[in-house]
Image (cartoon, rainbow, N blue to C red; front, side, top):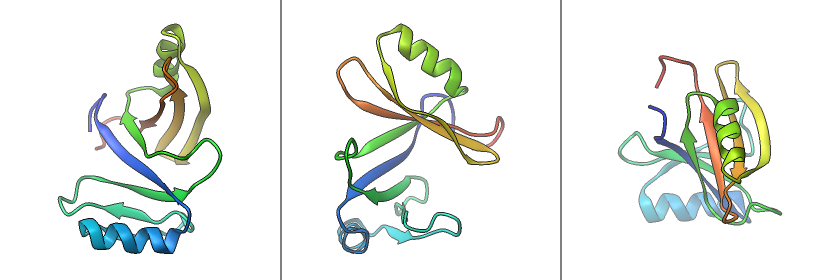
Length: 121
């Protein structure tokens, strides 16, 4: 993946099991929990590239959210804030090799940011 690529889409659902059954049947997605990410079933599209997760619907998370690959979350947040965005979720590690954050654009849209290890993806 490269800077600017869509890497992941989270879909909020009120019931993880029912949501997994729905999207699996509808689109043929393989949906399963991964070790270390229990309670967050991840989906993979038939193309083997597209994917994301099903997450509990909650306050501030009521619409699907796309995550965009960036070279540096810190640099991207700084640019976003200069352009009028705010930070909804500060940078957090996913693993020892990746991190995520969420910004809110000037129109109120939540956009996820994903940073992986340089040279991977």
